[in-house]
Length: 343
Image 1 (tube, rainbow, N blue to C red):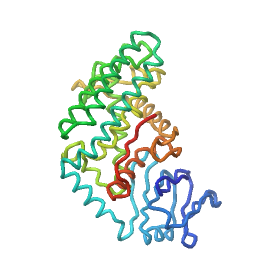
Image 2 (image 1 turned 180 degrees about the vertical axis):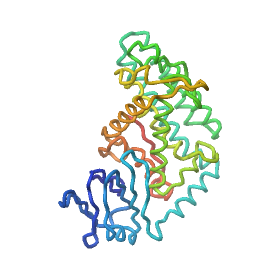
Image 3 (image 1 turned 90 degrees about the vertical axis):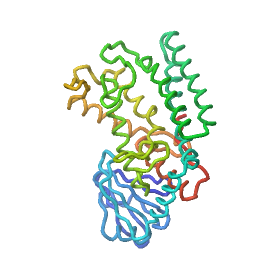
Image 4 (image 1 turned 120 degrees about the horizontal axis):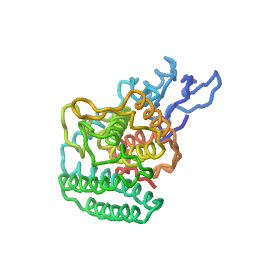
């Protein structure tokens, strides 16, 4: 059990939420392991096999504290809300800013800057650890270009200009993606980013894990009271979770790309875990998919100090915290949205 941004996150299997006067308690094997006055909480998020008494749900509903139930993977299953959760005003503000290009630019800019900064950090760390000088030089050169992209992102005058900077930075980053691999495995040569469909095993891994991260981000938006369909960087499109895609930009390199590189470098995935369909798309076998999902869930259990709230958090909670920070900014509690920048 941990509280971040006045939100209680419960992930202990068998935990049970109960009411105790005007306090919410968490019991594990009939022992109270957590107690908090209800007025100090904004929300409760439960992962996995966590129970909740009707009285505890009523207490939370009466005080405007949402209770969200998620699968162990992070997928939102359902929420318990009171009659006045305040989401209407939050979403109206979200829609208002999404309809304004200057307001959207102000929110999209830090997200793009964080994406570029985190991509650059991945390249710089790889350059530092590179076994040969040529590889280190290639990585460092592209990292320098990303530094220039950071400067251009800071001065982009329109959303389209910002999107152009982001696209150029992505091309620079992926141009040296092969140099992140420390083992010679021809089957895992990266020819460049391909999507819909992925045409090689590396792109298949990237696309699959980006999709998993987007699912997590969508749940995080819903739990934070935001509309995952209405973003600021990504344009509206039927069926597209634009805000979820906005939020994962900050975490692509830090979480997904580093995990893909680790899986390949450690030979945790093999060429026979992939097959080519009649359409030319490369897909993972069921066994490979299970291996990758297990590695993703393990990575989400890693911990670090969050750069803004300065608390130790699990990697899997970062997307939830970013969604809550965004909602706080939209409500006026924060002057600006603080993106996740890996340090």
